[in-house]
Image (cartoon, rainbow, N blue to C red):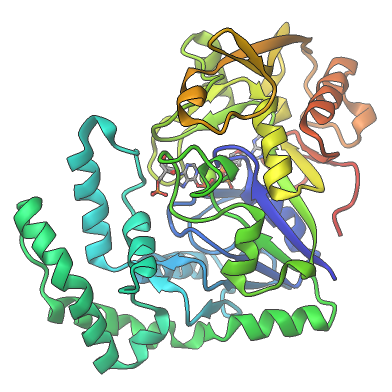
Length: 427
Ligand code: GDP
Ligand code: IMO
Ligand code: MG
């Protein structure tokens, strides 16, 4: 049963794109199961750099079929421009499959996302402004528009009417904005129908048949465990389930089919947008991590907040996802520090706490308890095996593995495909 889930173990941007791309050559399908174009995955192949938002990173591997599952929210204009951008660079995208049950991010969902954030003022979440939350809200409220609705004008019109009935009241009366015309939205959405038609498929059937035939399927999460709507730092989260269970609902594959769950873990921590972050640094070390790690958002261009590695979070990710392996990324960024602090526990109101507190108030008060690990100065970007790493880098990896509760099976020492140390094979 070769189904693998690959997901972020922290607050996103752990290097999932690179890890997926690396495995893409050995898998038959790569499936996005949640989120939308709030994701930003950078993949470096040779001297080419790709920024993907909606397409699974497997799209860059010729033998692999990329799939956008039912749990994803799709902005059709972004999808089409991402496809044409790749085509212009010579990437064949014709194998893409798009679930007819995926929900569409409509122009009014994007408007509502932006005005809601503005209205929240200081209390804002710092969303990517891509309409993600409002689209999932419509889905749960049963007034969402699905890809398959583009192929029935009458149904589409009724659904847009139902959605706008309430939204226009809110937009005009609460937010003081102009009402959005049903006809205009329907016309805009219908214009995407023919362009998307070649990709639309019953992806649940396709994926389950593939698994029956012993094909290898990789589920690629967007965002990360701590941004999960159920298991993250609510309300400072995204509106979907990046955690492992999300792969089942978001792709229509049963949990008994999943054999491996790989957590992508940065050797330090970053976060974009608002919300608690115990190991966040506001000093020159934070600045250095941002500069050396190139920690700028791929989607919004915002500076990422940076901090030391947090083992409490990593342990939590192991637990809620049932992780079987970690892929540790960006170890090279830590080269040059004399000592590297690692957060091993929190101090909350004078108490030492080893596990992530379930109370939001406690988490907001959590202060990191650090253990200092010795650093290294040698360039590690050419290391091919664990033994090639300097002793202190080896000890850092081993310490993280011990604290995090799952084996570290690969280590990233640079952004390129080949800048990876493989310890245990994933497939
Ligand atoms: P994702 O959202 O999880 O796919 O991660 P992003 O692409 O947003 O951010 C990760 C960044 O780190 C990208 O610019 C990658 O090219 C880069 N990257 C990934 N792995 C490594 C690594 O091991 N070392 C270094 N230096 N960069 C890496
Ligand atoms: P990848 O896949 C990092 C954050 C936003 C905001 C919160 C809610 O590249 O790891 P949303 O627009 O989803 O409603 O915003 O979630 N966020 C991410 N942070 N990486 C991402 O994706 C993110 N996608 C959303 O910054 O705090
Ligand atoms: Mg990213």
